[in-house]
Amino acid sequence: MNELQPSRAEAGSAISSGPVFCPVFRYVDAPRAIDWLVEAFGFHKQAVYPNDDGTIAHAQLTFGSGVIMLGSATNDGPWTVRSPKELDGAATGGVYVVLERDEDIDVHCARARAAGAEVIREPENADYGGRGYSARDLEGYYWSFGSYRPAPESSP
Image (cartoon, rainbow, N blue to C red; front, side, top):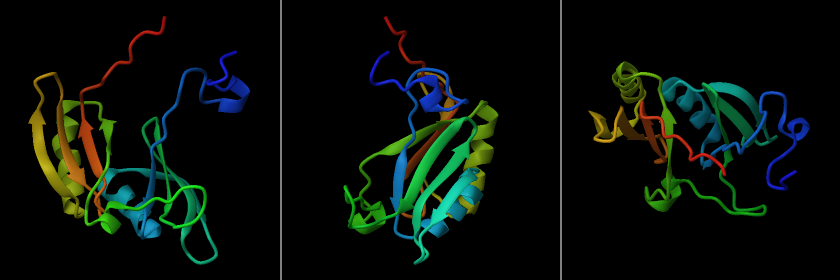
């Protein structure tokens, strides 16, 4: 077995093979961010583990078959993470989320805007296919939503 791929038992019953990606975010106000991501982008709370002080140790939110993990921004532990809010709005990356149909893009964008998302790229058709838009969340992370579905290359 490849050391980099967990066995079926280790991965869980919902994951049968191949790598799984779960973007991780740290928010200054993680409890508020969780509620906002549900309202604005349509995520669903799967698990939320608060600390005694009201910060979030770990949370998992789902969107279709995708999962993100998040928690409160801290200055301790094995790695220090800052939210764009703490970096004068500078983000160092973003996430692209696939929606099923072109028609969903405009509706999703309107929902996000109504919840206070800063739309930085209005819904548009892409030259390479699909339709999409981009927004910043309440702490400045970049999110793109689109109907273009990139396909991974076949493994040898």
